[in-house]
Image 1 (cartoon, rainbow, N blue to C red):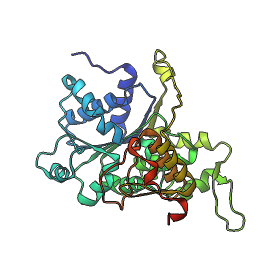
Image 2: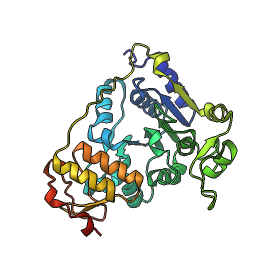
Image 3: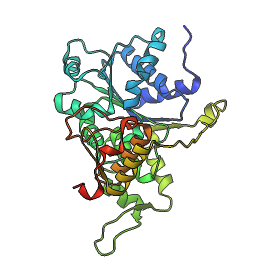
Image 4: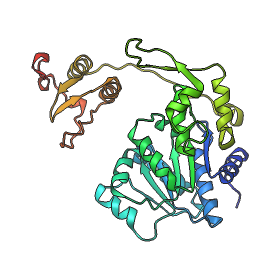
Length: 325
């Protein structure tokens, strides 16, 4: 049976098989998922006996993206699978059942649950889809993988944008792969080696941003090149055009606009079934994005599971600004 892999995908597969801990930085449309399936199947055929945990963005779990890809290429692999995108009561049983499948899919949003409820992870292979989501070394998801990665015999980090915002973000992503061998064991050492302080508070000494030193980009790329493979769409798939960004403006209903403005100005708004808060600028941005998308997740401490839809928001649910504590 003819392999569905293209030549550049075969190159990526060979690279991953040769490097037990690696990053595959393949541009959008180059087939990161198919390449990963091929790597897992070849490891199985080679008798490595790995059980893979594949951590993917929550949206891909809801859309069953990986499951559809595994089904699509079922004629070319013999991987068994399960998804932990199931009700909480079924997750623990799925993790502890005898005869664990070759591949276990889990949302990145469920990592805290998995870390809390499964003391010893039975997986020895880890694939992190969209590695750039782990760029914040203070995030819970990064801290979990930083600790859990030690028991993994193979780790593959997948992304098309390893440096989405700044070169500083790369440290945490690479640390998930190699544990700090290439770029330093801590973010502090990484900054000391390749960055200098940018904006800062001169009275307190607090640094607000770090700027790369001259030549830092080339030096960092050289440091990770031995175990990271980068492929661009323009080089390997010039037939795929750049994505078309279509920006359209829509008007919010009056009630939703009222909530949006109140949250933007006060960082808090009272709705049924509870109060919605934004503790900092990052949370505020997410809250406002949720509003424009038509929903709002409740605060974690709010046990009410209902997610209020903005189409149902009415100005009468909003307290006056002076009554909000």
